Image 1 (cartoon, rainbow, N blue to C red):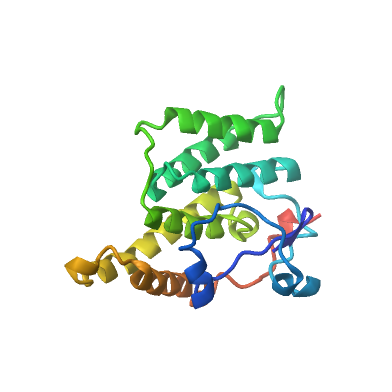
Image 2: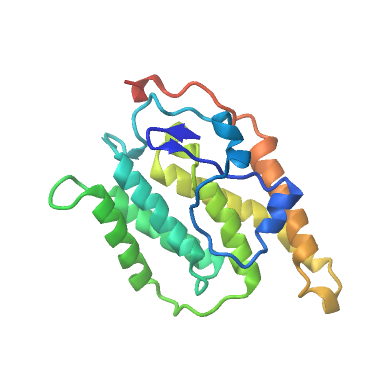
Amino acid sequence: MADRRGVFITLSHFCPTAAALLLQERDITIVEAPPSLSLNGAVEGLDATGVLPPLLRPGILTDAEGYAAWEAEAIGVWNDRRYAAEDALAIVSGATDDVCNWRPGTETLAMRARSAFDRARAAWDRPPALQPPIEHAIKSFLAAHQFASWHAYQNGGLQAVVRAVEAAFATLGEELAPRLRSARPEHRRRVRAPFITAVRAADFRLRHSRTDVRPRPLPSLRRH
């Protein structure tokens, strides 16, 4: 995806190599893409460079700095190994609702994004605890669906992105649960193969078998 801030790339985990990367014990973070991944600037995707920023809520747009701050704060929640994937999703959702209630005044949208995520973490009603590696892998998958999401431009802004991540979480659960149940009891801790298979199936459904994820004309009201 390209917008005023630059070009942003996230991977489809239908690719088995990309799916396996989710299981590596690395931080979930935003990094510079190497030329080999960005195709030396020739990568294709949604072009949002000529449209208005994503909606905050009907009648109010985000700005580049606020949108980037919201995105970075959400990535920070996904990376926090103390939260299970479901808990992290609830925190991101609650913080986003808070951000979307922002009104121009004493704080910038970026400031509101940071304080909203701080409040969402503080208000979480379950004490965080170190989670098993599978939870970090699931959160890596969800972060990939949140980062550089086309839904921000095509389907209604920040809350549309969260709804898309919720759909990704549900879809992965549908694919993963039966594969783990079918594993032999003594092998259930060996989740690598069923996880990779489930992730590939989920991203095939989410990114490759739908007709609404292709680049399409953005709403005329969003254009300059």
